[in-house]
Image (cartoon, rainbow, N blue to C red):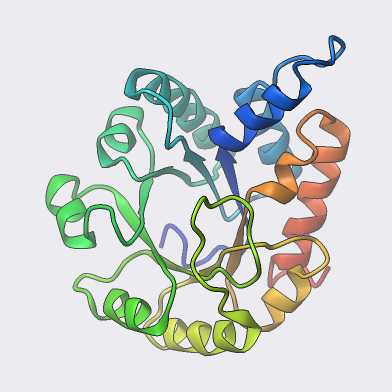
Length: 235
């Protein structure tokens, strides 16, 4: 039930993206470093998000756990599911609701053995991977599918799948009662098409990080994306 009744924007705080923005802006003395907690507060204040995820692939474990613990507390206060990418141990210790795993991470079964109290989401990039995820017992709490469009947030992105494949994937997931999250290259310009092709939610990194230095713009853009993506808000 954690995700099944939700829709809209799945916001991702990707520390590599934020760190890269800080590095670019370091030559501008008027720019302050991006605070991931302030960034999260702006996101969660804008809309009742589908979920908020921490993706910290290159941070050391202690620093990741400290940020995850702070984010878990913030998400609990506003009723937004909090997800940690890749790390069931950090998810457990921080009080997160769920862990998100990719094809090269622990399997769904392994995560459930290690952390039976965590919800599990999984990324899939083709129909063979999707069908394996939808055949697992018990089922994942959601599946992600894509990249739907070209994406800049992955070092080695998988081939794009497009909207027609997204619609087919969404139908397969819906038949199993599993929410499907579209991933990859999603912006305000294509969000309505993603929703109209059956996705329950869409995960976004770059289109949010682009407004990281402007709180008001970030809140407005987050709200617009969520309302366009949410099935209960036609946009």
